[in-house]
Image 1 (cartoon, rainbow, N blue to C red):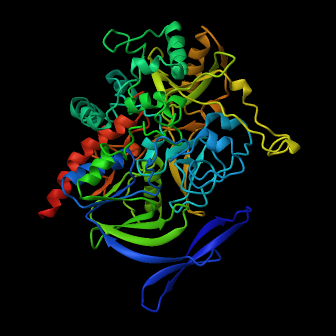
Image 2: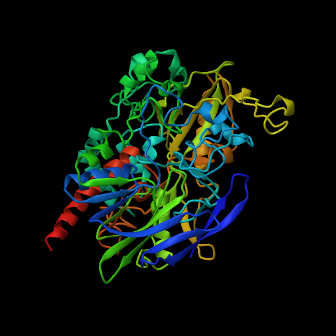
Length: 601
């Protein structure tokens, strides 16, 4: 018997019991009592290889397995986000307007299984009336309160919120598209090479082969000058001018300024489509700074695109992607040498439709840092994978993510993006960092009920103080790391992130920004606001420790972790997308050989 917390339209909560019954035909089914007449049929499947998750690690896995002719199924708990009409906004994805200017209409595309919309950093300060429908939206939140609706293992995260993508394409749907190589100097300074000597070999392989292999498909490139010069990219230009005037000169990477200089970011964007936005033939999306819920024009070169990893994987004919399939448990049968993956298939509103038991000899877990680690932690502590070692659930980090604002003018700043520039600062060995600008549109709240002064009586968000703001973030190496745990009484995976773990990055970053007194007013945010959220969750299954050097989970043959969970806490002062993809490419070379080799045994 399982329990699921359900909430009706007026906010009443009910526990719905999923009770196993046997039909007259002898077929197992699950009937939800107290939640309608829905009947969930149970089924069984076998696949040569199973990939859990369709983000960067899962998409690389899918393509390389498919190219080798290995019959593979990719399980993704989110929906597909096909852009059917790139001239409409909102179209496929939610927008800031669809969330904030229609507060009586519940937006179903923004948030994953929550009734309160999030996804804009300005939302943090107010008890906002922006209402989402509890649905399979694109942006998922992990926080101190476990999501009561999600069928995947319950999780509580202390002292931080984690944002991640939900849907076919994972984080590539909602990130800012920043995709560049870490510097060698950053790599050498980011890891304890005495404790992890294998990281030197890993860098050698990445730098000599796998960065290039991943870039050939991800296709990152900087913003062209003609686009940067348009009025829409005012925030990008202001940030660059600010950093250069403050002592971070422009660099081309070979002029000696790469450790203390400013350069364009490489991004997975189709700049020709951005030009179509500028010409008015596509929905204005990238030029308005949209990213957190997806880009309606199709300008983001996300993983689900035809010529990106997932599109190419499906074209092999050996890979099937199954959206709206949530993995609830994984286990291993010692007698059959098969892994069992328990799956709940849902509809777009996350109503359960089918309970599926999948067996496979080859299991690749690519559900992201939190998703992968919580599956492993649950399996370890419930006896489903009891031989997982003590490194499982360690070396987790927010990648130093810290945010700040500078108010540079008294009118709106055009927020073209999703991003544009980075500045490196290696001056303090205890707080190395990369500083980047991100687009962040200031919400415009519509008072829909003047008689009561707004939707929530006299509470009405005052966003005027943010008019004219430029958002800046830091990526750095925190001084501490977090660890996962298990609460047996509630069956909940916990993540303990020390409140002061990345205070070294906060102190250094705010010192830099305050010292750069060239124009505008710097808004000093308290650390709990500046570091409230991360989009770069890393660690939990550190490579070479919880796994071997090629992503195979230690003590379990043919079980692999291939995603951000294998990166030990930090991504060497770079956004992690390229690093995750490149490590996945390296691991898949070995994984494919292992699977092909087993066929002949």
